[in-house]
Length: 635
Image (cartoon, rainbow, N blue to C red; front, side, top):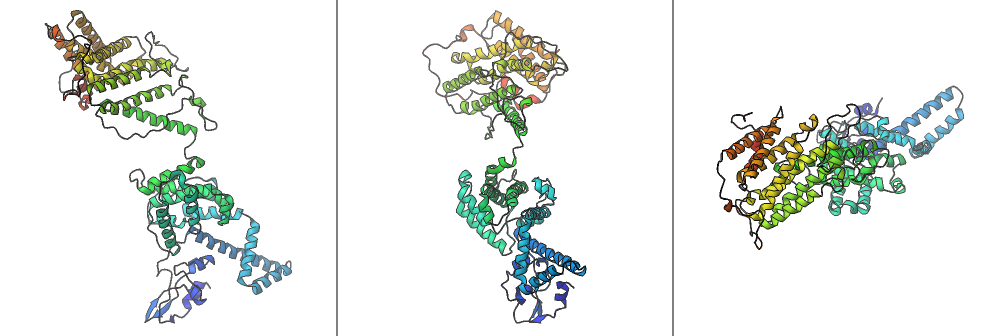
């Protein structure tokens, strides 16, 4: 008959006061924790039978079964201690059974007599010491299997998965009360203070992201509450920080010191990775991406201390691919037309290291990745140069807006124009060539030489990007000769685009979206020069021919995008306006010489109309991507 059934038949005792101790401790006059199950019952393997002593006080029954008082969840250390005791009892019972069987068969009577003497005369302490000796003989393998078993029960893992240190996706998948209870059970209350203080003494200088006195005070009160059986109000973000701290502490702790805390060698090797994964799961449950609380940010700063040891980075291949992805996103963010406006809202930068200049065949998780110099062209070279161009425009915005006078802003533009000229100094192989001849034949199955295509893209992109920098002084250059250089540079860049587009290229070269959009931009520059530039019949005829050539190039596209369609309409209107003008736009004397006179002074500040929208800005505004409500351009 079980102890619970015997306790149910025991008559209820009448008392003058309520008994809060459990029945086991009360009948033996032992000090009880007054939490259920108490530490003494857990240590004896009686956690399921621990309940308050049932008494009648003033005609009212107090105490009773385990359902009456609220029962707490034992900590991981207490569960481990209880299971050890149960293992001892099972081992002792198995030995008694084997000895009795041997005695019946007449094979081991002497051994049975010796065991009975130990059991009857030595008492419980001697029995426990004999079991401890046997457990010590088994070595550390049993403790490692036990740790894997307990942790696996909490996390739903098999022993093989725990031994491999795998992080399963189904761990702590739902944030609920059960998950918080499971996390509470994982807190090593017996050695928590030692682990946390070891981190504060030896590792805090690495990150210094939490205030040591405040953290220790909160931790000590929290652990004391757990030891008393209280249900702490710790949240997922605090658990993330806590497990990150103790994981780092145990990882860097000397093995001898950890063993003095009562930890086995297998536990020292397994628990840091286990606590590290638990901290990551708690970060996920805390919603660190949408609700970055202070403990979440602190945990994120602490975890990289040991992340390298557990291969969180994923290896060379994954790391480099992630850098390339981030580089592409940064380029797309910085090279959009809206982002190139000086008053564009610039978000805080989140830079990462650029990807290594290495071929994919040389990228492996099994060896060291050595980045080649930029002069050696690899599959990443084009991306790296694009990143440099994106950085140029990202730096241009704050540099331009930080200046107040027109002269200062003009110098900023010239400085960044020189920086663009040096873009290919480290990678001359990708610099555009004036004498480039593009072949239209290439092997379908063999290796493809992408460098001519990249040079063609750069040859069409650099003129448009140069116009993007100079365009803020383009309007003033038609009325103020001191800014004449802006007009000269923009017109030269537009004509360079025409020369590149006039060359015979393969069909696939024509399908790049930005090539057509850059052609529209250059056409706008030439059409603007035709309308507002100096009146010279020869120059006007040349500009008309160049604008018409750009229109013909754009109409060759059988499936034009919105940028091309809108550009065709505007260019047709500007060309028609210029051709309809039979007389000069103005008296040539009204236009100053192309170069500023000597001895002039720059204006102290910009006027209100310096950056008013013109035709070029109209092309790049938000309405550029919706078709205007007008008839299509004549073909």
